[in-house]
Structures are given as C-alpha cells and as structure tokens.
Image (cartoon, rainbow, N blue to C red; front, side, top):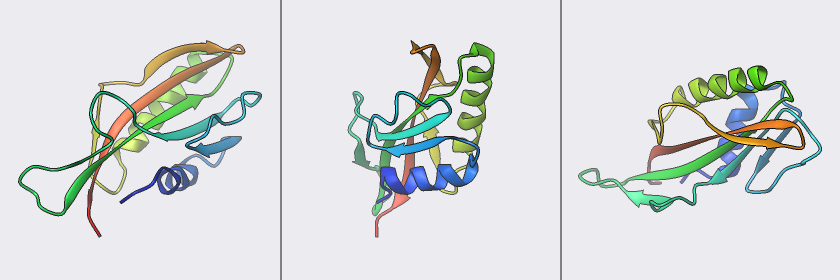
Length: 122
C-alpha cells in the first residue's frame, strides 16, 4: 500500500522549490507554495480491489496546491503538478481532465487534483 506520506515524499523530490509539504494535515495556512497530500475522501472508496487483477488495488489521493497570490502563476503550477503526477512510476488515473480551482484563501489561490494510484499488494 502506498501512503499519503510516501506519495508526499515522492512529490517533494519533484518540487524542491516548494516552501512546505504536508501529508494528511492542514499544512501551514500562513505559507504560500505548499503541496499537501490527503487520502481521497470522495464518493468512491479510498482503496478498492481492481476487478480481474488479483493482488492489485487503487489507492485514491487528493493533492492541494496552495501556491501564489497570482492567479496565473498558481494555475500554471497546478497544471505542472498535474503533469508530474501523471508520470508517477505506478499507474495513475486522474479523476478529472485538469486541476480544479478551489478558490482563494488568505489571498492565495488554491487548486486540487484527485487521482487513483494502481499498485500491487505486498
């Protein structure tokens, strides 16, 4: 099973310029340029067995991108994170065709990316 922390650590290696990385917590609301990984709590189960592939599961995650006061810079970073997640070493299925804009919190633009990671049971 891949954990939120393990995925966060991988993401940290892809974006060393970020000011903060968090897994499963709210992060630091005073910082810009943060990436937070959460287990996905959407309509589907966070982890489910893959039909027809014994020993494989989907693990679902959400990445919160809290990046900048500039809407353009934040959107560009969200798309960059989206593309990097698509290149994750294990198979990834995105829940939508692009990052979703959440809004502005403390003048910082926020986006989320929801996705599944297919992994083999250990």
